[in-house]
Image 1: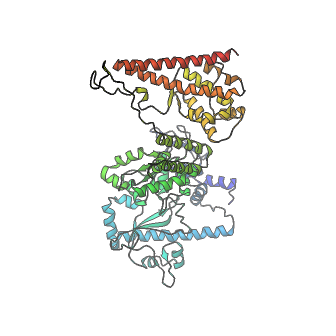
Image 2: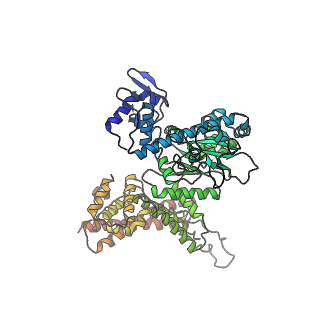
Image 3: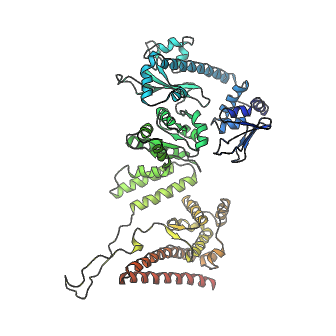
Length: 621
């Protein structure tokens, strides 16, 4: 399909932008323009202006800017061509068709839209007459107010094999079958697909009925599925359609989120609770196409799953679908509901605030992936643990984006290391106290508390101000100068936790480079780091100390850099242990605490002396 600039300009000229926006936002006249509170961010004082003469809107608060087509894509959540088609209908223009076959298909779809609209009218009328009494009682039992029943278009399909066909007699049976409203069985007369069910229309982003979902009402029909959806048709592709997207799109602009639940009745229940940005897949696990459509609305949709094993399986299906698609800033967040409860149960039992609290506590995709795989099987043997690591790395390999793949591999490997190689608490040796060596004489024995430096020792080594900071700057400069050494020291780098965010970002970038298994020349690496806006250390950062690995390139360079890295790891660990030992001695004031403090103090002085020797020795060269 070719849309010329002239045709698009004519389309924009025929649309009243203030009238278009005014359907969703309250606008007021302000001179030759219109004003409104911006629908793209929360504000109390209007800063959103609409200029019909120039054909654009602009927000002076958040910078949102665009024309009628941009409004339909950004605010209404429509794809570009859907937005153009919707505006063309309003403007009374024909969208150019690429060829006769496409024109014929468009005409066919238009006719099917008429069929679906007529079916929806019939279902709504049936709900209101005597045939819909049972359905009305069910809706009342769910606590759905009349306004919600009307807005979501609830209806009723009579328990008859021909009621719909008779009501839609103006349409040939072939069209009803093609629309998925009637079923053909070889050797039998076609019959209505939906019978004795509460009906809910499924709409496309333009608000047109394209399919139906039906919930059975009779408890006697145990052999029938509880929920029944339309089959795939020329209008309806269940793997690409997201239920309630046309309502959730505008609502998500206000809330900044999209909530994905398992079924359309959950969507309605959340709407009653005031959560209007809820959507649902239709009879399948969340597909790649549906994830992409949700990402057009928000960067991190929130998925809700039951807390039982079936909910965990559903969460993993969504995660495995999403992993290959991940890109910077785009992911999923996951909420695990209490076991045996759906969103409606949570709202009714604990109130909307409880559901909001669950949504606020949504976990990241990597957290849920780790927890599900960790708990999937026992971890009692080395083989069990190796299996966990293999599963985690297999998930990482499915991620297409190289940086995200590397960061996932690093994050999950760290968690696996903490689990598989956890430090076991040692009971320190305690000599017998007292003057006598005889059993039972002298002071009674009691175990001394473990040194604070050994209690709950953090896996990360904090580096604040002082010698460690200067040494870290020198080491990072050395690794940038000798990129081949990065892989050798990746584990040590991963343990460091500088206070400076810029230094943390630089370490992460070097670790990502190590994960790529690609060795660059120094200048190439510097170029990559600078292009990413990272600050590289300078001679001032390491107090002018002239380490050999910063000046030379001989065989000893790697060994000298390794010695500096070892010193960098041990020095902050000793400083932290000394701090704990000092606090312990101030509390206990015992010989043991004093001895431990002095031992660590001497070790720190020795490390600082070695650091000074390294710098002075190289400066003399």
